[in-house]
Length: 204
Length: 204
DNA sequence: TCTACAAGTAAGTGTTCAATTACTTACCAA
DNA sequence: TTGGTAAGTAATTGAACACTTACTTGTAGA
Image (cartoon, rainbow over all chains, first blue to last red):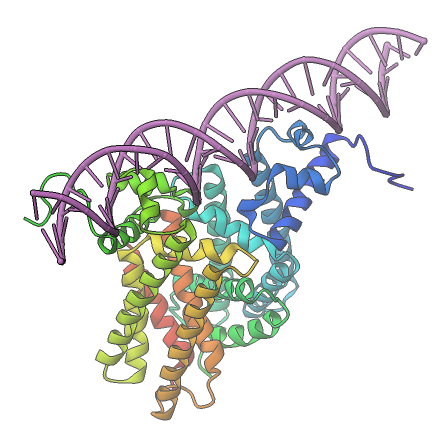
């Protein structure tokens, strides 16, 4: 038995991951901005004050969550790309992997958008920007490979293609945030992806 | 002279529009969630309490702002579409008109995303959803016209095409929110639009 | 001119929430 | 066994903020 009775006295490392998971769960249900340290504590059956034994501030929690998201998401994206046979198939696989990730963690888009909104340069926003830059780079590499192999039109505007790719996913994410259900999302994603590929594929 | 000296004692209707403009200005500078009624009052050289002479609650202010945005945006979109010669040109004109609107009112995407984040169904969120539905409908009509005239591929997935259109704009909006400058946005928009049209245009 | 009312102010109230404090308890190593 | 420390609690603090209240003032219309 791993956790007998009411969980007490976990090492800080464990608590930190528990807190991150709690935030993701709470973000999936409601407005991330409304998540309080008391909400987090409740979910772990802890007192509100105990949260601050494991993170120095609430901002530090957001940073840790962002870090978690980034490492998990990119692990999935890169794995999907490498499993594919061709660069273009890799792009498609990344698209669907990303959509799957969002469906599995519905709180993530909400979190991202929350930090985007601030116009000052917080560490949070820098983290989001960094993540998007990394994403663009990954996409442009893939597109470059595809161009070499003649899978996409020669002289393709790869920067614009990356932007449209990310925009398409963001559009889907927003759609699922609006109607609250991510059930149809997978199917819609397939159709949008198909259309996207029309824009970049080498003409037959 | 319309406004001599320190403005005092304006009719409520005037104040209401002043408040809406103040909110848009403040949202352009910072996090909309951080805008307080005191911030708004400061900007109009009023006391904080005076704001509530013109709106019953802060939520009513958000609703009024959303309404303002919706009516202005759609006026521009529809005008752009009608000025164009063909349905496809109309789509392009709408795209650029929307981007221009965002560049002119950088606070608007922030406001929209703010209300999207809540998962409960607030009137605000319903308003945003309604606006997006109206947008989709407008796009699908345009695409239908273009299909009739043979400007786009026959049997085009118009729903997916509308989604990709909106996603592309959202991607651009997020981009400009991230780097804080909307200067390059117009140029990037042109390139993304060109790519988008590749996806739907009838093959020559 | 005067008066009713819309528009304004200043000073609260109540609540929410992050962070702190003072204290307690479980656990591990010597 | 015992002492130090990491993990926990309950209670409090202080700031922020939406909204209210009691009162004042400018102004349009009779």
